[in-house]
Length: 327
Ligand code: PBG
Image (cartoon, rainbow, N blue to C red; front, side):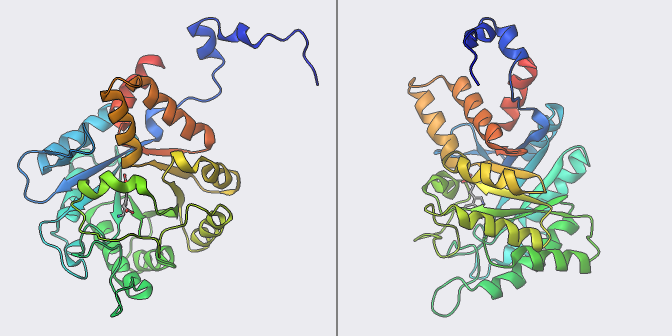
């Protein structure tokens, strides 16, 4: 095939031509805003390593959720920061705990207008900071953790979450959560499986966001950055176990994985543009090294182009305003 007369620049000549011929667009409806709520706060508290992101108080979280609805954002993903932690993460199972209360508060604020998602994981709630409970030898005990996740999931569904996001990378987690939800009468609560979640240095700022107590790393349960094929196994297992949606995380360093998963997944595929991806762009922009808005838009468009149907990004609400301007 050859097109000797073709001059691709013709279609780039004006903003209107470029808009008309754009192959991909992002819409606010496919964005999900991750949000942190910290127990006992009366005012939101800034997160130093994530300029512009806060740990919310109850009131500021409700305002952020209402604003997201008003801007057309599709969903919110809630993370709780408790004041007390213990070895088994029991605050995560307390129906009156910070995360479960936040789910109920946001649900009463926005009803069914915003898809309310919540993190099913123990790292925010354990005093050692791991995503599961520990065995006597200090390793993360897969099957003992599953029992806790099942109970946590039912509590979050009862609090009013529409979608649960198990992020701990325990084997079999989707199956036990699905079974527990069904037994408790929550057949309609969906599961967004963190299917291909990699052990990443780019989670750094999230540790501050949730005051994580972790020393060490999560390499015995999260995936190795060297592996590509394995992501498909993780996705297939989660689909067999009943995942309604699957996620690739982080996003920007894993766009090949996202494209692979998008090519084979029969269910919607989410990508999580994580804390470190956010902070890198914010830090470079604050130094005047890159154009902030253009870098944000380009990064999210790249994630969309690679195949994401849903994008979790800390810029969701701000981006929604820009997208409306240019729609
Ligand atoms: C685990 C969890 C993490 C993130 C989301 N869920 C931390 C981790 O796996 O270390 C990271 C999100 C981000 O960095 O923005 N509960």
